[in-house]
Every structure is written in structure tokens, then in C-alpha cells.
Length: 233
Image (cartoon, rainbow, N blue to C red; front, side, top):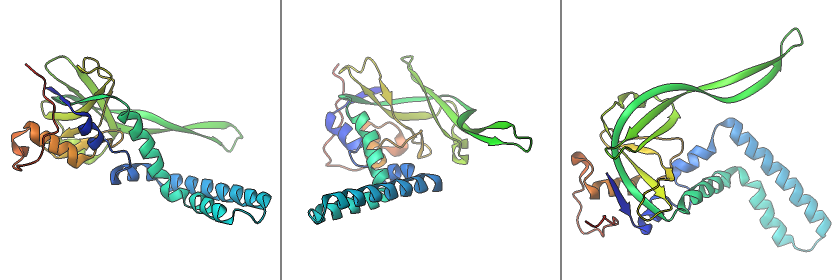
């Protein structure tokens, strides 16, 4: 099932500013935090040097730049998540897609390499690999897609035949060509799978309820304006 949504719905579901889950994604691990702290330090040194060159004038502007540079480690995740969201928000058309799980399988992917020297002085390349879950979804129209994510024990409940829902993005008003897909929602488990949490999950679940995609999740609320544009005919 593929139901076109309004432009207003797209702008609600994929927000311009990072959500909490998107901020957490870009916050990363300790290595990512240390990298941002290093960038903040370099930026502070640059603003200090520029301030020395500028002399005593422009103290207020220098203070503003000092604050921005010094806090990059904190606001950086907001910036990068918002940039990533913006790439998806540029697509003019979107639709609510519902299908089912076709297959679930595990792969190992190369996520990085490290070079070191062993005790004999030989250069050794160490490959860092990560186990990932791959969920293939499809519908009766023949459309299929695979979404991947780092493996998580919560994903064990995902089985072939279960309902899967996501947002699809397109440059064509008829959604005849699908250009991008988002993370996938499994309503029977209230579970999400994807590389990056593109969606405002509460808004997407509202859309799912309005469309009656799953009987257990049919909305009981009344009086809300619909944000779904159904196909005619």
C-alpha cells in the first residue's frame, strides 16, 4: 500500500531541526566527542588570533564567535542532523508505504581500518567489522527495499510476513519512482530499524493510525485535521 501525503505532512515528519534521537545519533561515542572538542579548541585558537589581528575593536563580535567556537562540541550534532534532514526535506513528494517483511539476515561490514606495526617491524592492517541486521521489505506491487542497522537483540522479534511501514520520497507527484526511503517501523512491536532516525516518530505513528494500517494501532482520537492526501479513484 502506498498513500501520498501532503507537503505539510512531510515537513512535520522530517523536522528541520534535530530531534532527540537524531541528536543522540550524531553525539556518537567518546571518540566523536573528543574530535568535536579538538575542533572547538582549534576554532578558539583561530578566533583568538583573529582578535589579536583586529586589535581592541569588535570585542562583542569576538565574544560571540568565541562562544560559538567553544561550544561546537555541544551544538555540532544539531548542525549535522539538521543538514542530513534537509537533504530529505528537499524532495517535493512523499508517501506512506506499508508492506511486509520478506527476509531478515545478518552480514558483517567493514567500518574502518587501523594500521599498526608488529614486533617484527611489519606493517599490519587491522580491519574493524560490524555485524548488521538487514531487513528486506516489499509489497504486492513488486517494490522491495533493504534497510540495515547495527545489530541489536531487540530485532530478534522481526520475522518474515510481519507488517512494515516507512516514508518514501520521490521527485514525481505520482510517486512512480522512489528516490529515498527512511527508517522502517514495525507497528506490532513498536520497533524501528534503520541507519539513521529520519522521522519524528510520534508524527509518523499518527499517520499510521489515521490510515488504519494496523488494527491494534487504529487511532481513537477525533477532531484532528487529516494530513493524508489519498489517491483519487
